[in-house]
Image (tube, rainbow, N blue to C red; front, side):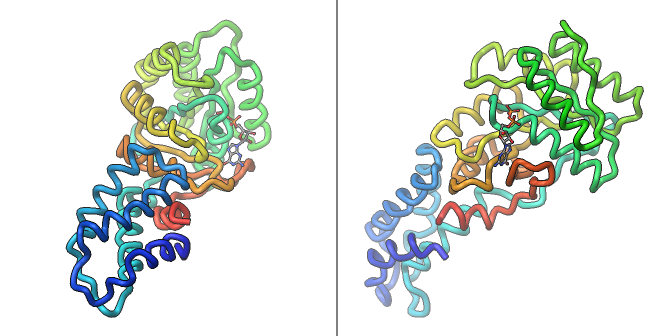
Length: 296
Ligand code: GDP
């Protein structure tokens, strides 16, 4: 594993075996390769910088022992630091609140929000025996509302009927009310996305939040997001206040650097990952696996 980075570091560092400790210059040379590996994995530049600073602190002065090659040693430091920055595993959706617990899904259009809404609803229904209500708040795109309605038909999970002309905040209130009357444990609000972040979107999200008082606000983001990941996560977190992240398209070819970028700028846990289009293709997040993948 990590042959790629290990090889690259090996050729820089392995001559140092038995030479005492890693010097600042040795570590700097190694970190140039680490930096390149992270950028290739689509980690945002700003996060690459703070990450390599942390690794530098741990690696400079580290004793070079005979039993392990210096290249391997640095790879281990990098890997451990990646796992630590990616955060703890098994942080599930928090339903520890009076029913109906409101879960608000936010994110850009096309990120996989509606699909993930269906997946989470199915998971809570199947595994935790919860009664779930889903509601689409995307009043600008009838196709999005229809998509959620179909997911409801497909999964057998309740979907709030559409009433033409209602605003997103009105739908949010109606969803919470319907969940109370219907004896639902959880109500998932699938909010509207845009192709990029803009002011009206953030205002709309803040209004929905104020009206529906969500216990969880999950930012759904495409794992293939590159340098924009930092901006995206920071904006949603600062303006709306997210409680967790869901990374979609982890089944794709990407190395998933966005996971590190988003986790680093928000400090919020990555709760779940999407690994396909099917309703069952949602998995728990394992930092070690993502760290392996980032290092390639
Ligand atoms: P929304 O606009 O954010 O609601 O995005 P959608 O839920 O409509 O998803 C956009 C597209 O991405 C659809 O074709 C989904 O099937 C697909 N999609 C969503 N999540 C995943 C995933 O984890 N893996 C893959 N391969 N495709 C996904």
